Amino acid sequence: MSAGGTPGPGLIPAILAGLTLRGSGLLNGRPPRGTPANAPRDPDGPGYETRDVSVRNTALVMAGLALAVLTVIGTMVWLMGAFSASQRRSLPPLTRQQTAPLTPPPPNLQADPYADLDRQRAGAAAQVSGYGYSDPARTRARIPVDRAMELIVGRSLDAPER
Image (cartoon, rainbow, N blue to C red; front, side):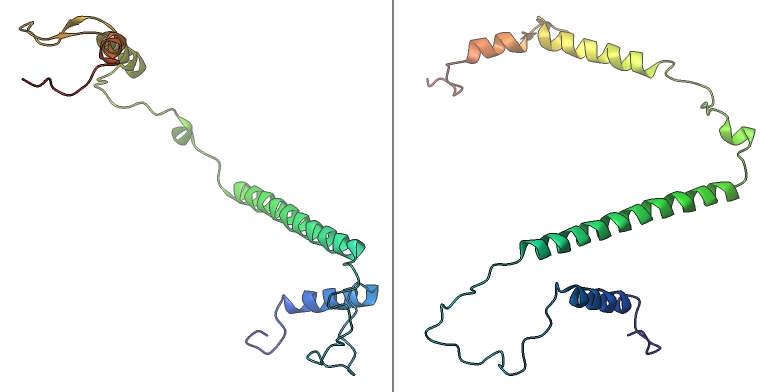
């Protein structure tokens, strides 16, 4: 119930769904009043349910739920389209200044940043895959990573004992 004492928006559809199920025979209602739910069972009875679940009723309920979900999703998509179209119509058109391409003010430090990035990557790849010296005094040399891996495979990485 809502604050005013009237049924909420979800209660009325639930009541209508229950009445529809009861009227269609899918919902049999309450157990007969003569036997309470906690009454002792017949000791000679099978001890399990003797009827299977109705596949037809289960399929109908699942189909109804799927239809309800698809209806809600379709309604939401339609509403989103309708609301966004009405919002677009209510906005004023864009001016030339708003649609003009943006260019940064001078000085442009990098005329072509992608070419600079390609040059930097090519230089780094050449250092990793080629021979050369790693310092200006030419006291340390570097070799390609693949060759270094070939030299190290199968050898211990521990320092030799003296």
